Length: 295
Length: 158
Image 1 (cartoon, rainbow over the protein chains, first blue to last red):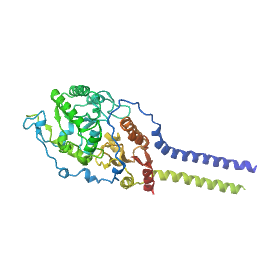
Image 2: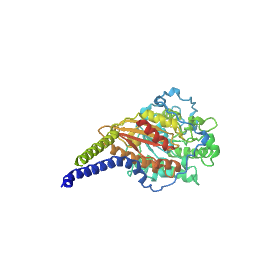
Image 3: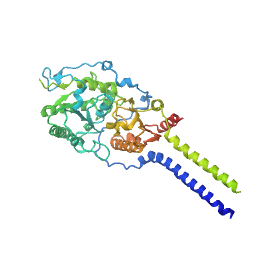
């Protein structure tokens, strides 16, 4: 009889233990799940392979990173490296007064199309309110065919993304990932298709084609493909194409390359991607290269 | 004997309630100095790229997260040469943390596929990255030294 009287207490104990264990497992499961669920995500299908692959810096060149104070990002433009503009002779649109200088509001209806370098520009230049259709390794062919714009499963191609909104200006910088293509005529042909698609989608926009930014001397001297000789050749092709398509060509190397034609050494860690200071130089230069449509 | 059993049951009950309440409290009342945590990681990690504080970043454009769902954020990004990044978020009190986690998981998944083919080392780094949840804080660090990040987070909680 005595043991029967104790049964409710034992059941209560077992119940409490069970509930507590469930509670504790539940509270830890959510954290565990958060940390591990990503590892279960399936690798997405392999698409077209871009050619450029940033190389790791040698071990001895690594430096310990220190936080950059927020004021560094907002520092006045007067603190940026001095740049000297060359004449406009290299541009197709060489008429006097063809360029005008604009402020940041000019870019509110602008869209930038490009690869990882333009992604860096988006984040590091301080530009606000512009739209960016960019992807790592983006090329003239994948801008036409590969769904890279958007999030998750709702991605579309760059060209399709352009159809959703009317822009006043379209800035394109592509070409470095295509340097290894065996046939440069294929590059020109595909770039032409892309420009045609952009114009068809944005008939009222000014289309700016930016040159491929040169790489650093160190990168250029070591790389048989991604070097400044090949970039110069491609830029000639791009400039010629811009003339044929009657779009505006902007030579970014006027301000981003040194007198020898190499990307300024201090502009980049890997010789390819620009740091915040030089992204701001790039942005400032674009402000001086707005097409004056009154001329 | 009955008295002893009642005592044991009562003691166990109190102990279990205490443990459960302690766990629940530790998950909700966490406070982290995000700037100090980021500085600690930056000082102890040999990042390949130079990470810069991005103080005007659009959370919606870059991470897909609606700004009103985030009470505090701190983001350091590189030049684009590597995947390295620090992104810390404190979710707003009236927002479901799990929903923000889902959004950030999509961001990481997109980032993973973006680096796939382009840079195998960066791809592996992103693939090994998880969202660490501490209370209402969601901490992402794409780093070559995950151990430093984990130790820094634990130290930030002390």
